[in-house]
Image (tube, rainbow, N blue to C red; front, side, top):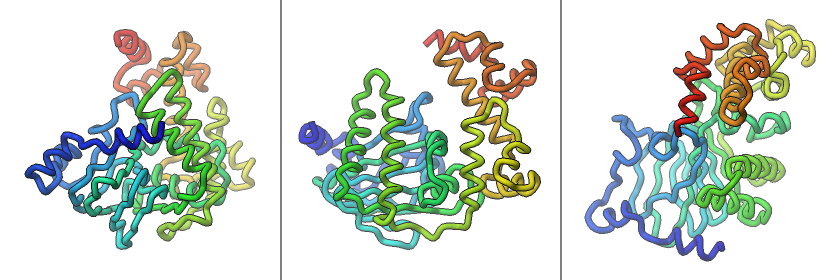
Length: 322
């Protein structure tokens, strides 16, 4: 299976064929509609997806650019040379590089045998991971800054894990699951990605990283876990009591770290859960509203429409027409 996948990935794409024939620079229109070079997730992700993979285009240098998503570079075969921020990194086969959406990097042209897999991931794909992350680790800091930090600090995590078999197997399973989706693939990918995060945390000694900005890890991660687990009835006062913090001080820390208030984070979680229930169940809309913790129907309709530009009924009707 892995040999077949390598042969598939070694094939020259249409974009690469044009580069080899007469074009010595990338076609930016493939990657962005913006004048500044920020690669856009919408170019590669459909509306229903939060994660995909794409083979990095070979034979041409990529100039300085950012992404509007979290990118993970994985060297499936060969090597990958790039400058991330001010640091030069030579990524070797089996190694991983996490880049948040705020860091600028540029890459050298890859040779034919250099197969780089780019994971394109919307930040909120990682929301679920806060339900099991430990409170003090580099990945939690990276994700908090990527998902919420309004200061737009560029960060990367470089994992030299080519010898860690459990990590290599998980990455290849994720790649195959995304490239050849089957029944329950979306759930399977999330589970594999969660396991990957756990394995990377266990091998944090093999990671290089940018200097972290101080974040109140314990307070923020525990707050996000609390919202994820208790969104139906969550309250700032109850959380503050659990964490032995004054409510006003905890509120200030949450706002400082995430750029959102506790109420805004809770509302986002409830709306996402309501959308999930509308998509995956036949539960009456009134029951969905109750299930996610709202008792004011008109208020729920207002905030749901403000976020998704449709009422819950219209949202469901639109799904039925697909």
